[in-house]
Every structure is written in C-alpha cells, then in structure tokens.
Length: 133
Image: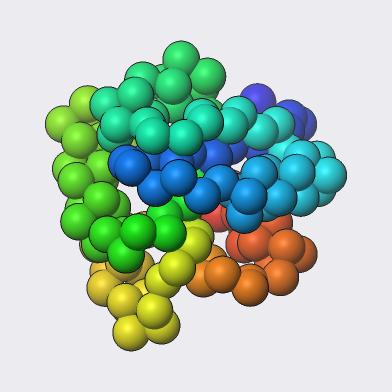
C-alpha cells in the first residue's frame, strides 16, 4: 500500500524538560486538519520514550518540537538511536526555536524538515507530505 492510499501518521513529540507545548499542539491540530493522523506525546519525553511511541504507533514521521535551544544535540542523539534500532526509515522533522544558522547543520545530519517558529502551517503540511510521496 503506498502513501496515496492512507493517511500520513506523525508523532508530535516534546523531548526533554521544555515545558512549552502550545505551539506543538497548534501544529498538531493543523496537521490533523490537513488529513494526517497525529499522535501527540505530551511534555517531558525522553528520546527512548519518543522512539518507543513511534514504533508502537507505526508512524511515518517524528516531529520534534524543541524550544530549549538544544535541537542539534537532541536531533543527533535521536538519529543515532534510530540507526541503532534500524528504524531510520522514519522521517524526522523539527520545529520550534531554531536559528536560521542551524538549519544547514540539521539538514546535513539527516533532519528532513526544519520549521522555525512562525513557519506557515501550509508550508509545514506540504513539506511533510512531500517527504512521503
């Protein structure tokens, strides 16, 4: 079954101690409104919990919402853990407080979409959809 025959499943996850999830919830609603199946992890998730949820929910995409400024080490660690577990076919995107100077490094390490705060919802949904077509 190809992606055109089913909804995209995305996990919206908040790693670490970051306590702000309004943006993540709003993006999750926008993705749901765009026809995606959205699983929201809740706050204060470890990377292990996020990956466990991603596997259990059989998601196509993990969307990290990171406001803490630790997006580079968090993304590096997550991608390494995914490789170890043999699940690097799941796409990873990140949004939140991300300076434009960090976008090339994130993409180089394998993050497939970077959405700094203020990115229009239609741009986010189109970008995620295009990853899976």
